[in-house]
Image 1 (cartoon, rainbow, N blue to C red):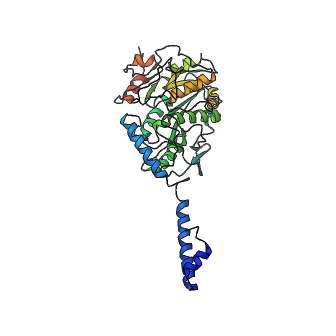
Image 2: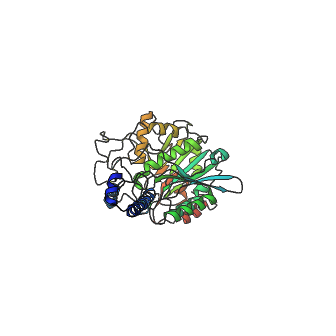
Image 3: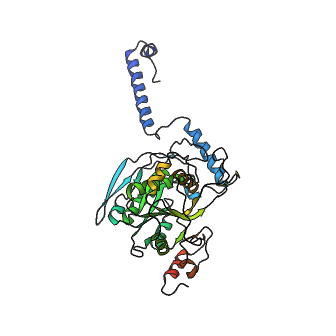
Length: 390
């Protein structure tokens, strides 16, 4: 219609000038509403998008059958639009800038780099941020907890338990939660709730990548970007999952004797075998990584690192393909840097298998996974009561 030539339209209109004028007005009206609707569509929309979206939903369904994508974060992976609006929220002490983008109900078109790779490096944007807290509070240790946007319960629990302890052994500890973009029903309402939560606690960092299992590597690298840009003056950082127990005093004790540069520790895997079973959520094909064993890497449940590493890891990521297994990918980047992760001072400090709770057992570890049905609040209350632990 937009390519209709003027002489052709003249023949079609016929001899009546009024009829011609009427038809031209109708065409102009149609073109106006057509262009208006196009501008309201998702950026970079193409007719092939629906086909790609259906294919990605099928991929997710297959992966979910293998228990890969948690139901609360089921979504199509991929980058989201840049932040478009800035809201200022004033606290009692200072002004905190919260970058807030409107979240589209329709999934963003996504060109997947493949089933085992993620979209990184990529310029993601912070939509909720705390750019000044590290500079103001000068923490010795920064705890970063990746968590789903809608998982408020885990955030509240951590705030009133191990994540709320500071100072510890006279060292300032600062807690932040790292979130991606939610993509299911009630997105706009959830985003408003996150803004209110951020105003109340000032510990949320949200970026515009899609928060789902496959994008954990993106989440980790965005964490490294944030630490490098906004928290490099701290001494150490720790990435720790939200379902963990953390003994912060024990962690501080080992860090007081640890190197301040090129340091990463945790539950370190040495010569971990590459999984070739296609039914596993950790499967990696030989064409992507031909070696039978991975280089040393710290398991993603919780690892500690000196804060000179984030800048180096972000730089290394430009040279290493971003596989979707986030802790393995960090191991690849560490190998590229020639910096192997360090074994912890004691192999009993970090636990992948949940340690059955007792005051004595938890007193002698640094971190452990917990069971889903475990009453973590009751355990914490008992752990913190006065008296000897062992």
